[in-house]
Length: 135
Image (cartoon, rainbow, N blue to C red):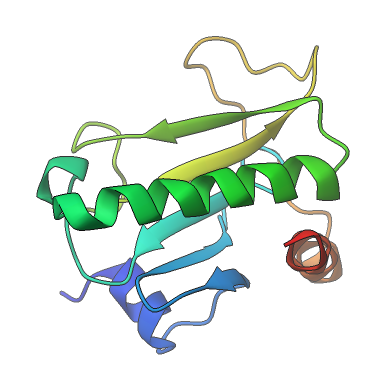
């Protein structure tokens, strides 16, 4: 079976892309913790952070920094949550960085992650556009 994130990177599966470079792609998570929850993935298929070539670690996390700022700005968030799962809790076996907007009292406690869906497809697209504009 093909990798879901490789299919998104290639454009064979649609996703709301908010940022793209030659080495990485960022798109809205289809099951967000909160609206604006972005997944940043390397274009090359690697399963874990340890598998990512050292020369790509810096650029990937520089992109994460840029996306963190954009997500917080676009969604008027007080902060953000940045996470990488390696194998355990990694629903797709392709390295991905979660960039999640946060606000005090948002209900996210420890590793209990309540999911908050987009209100509609339009809400999803508007959220993506806000992040793209902030970039």
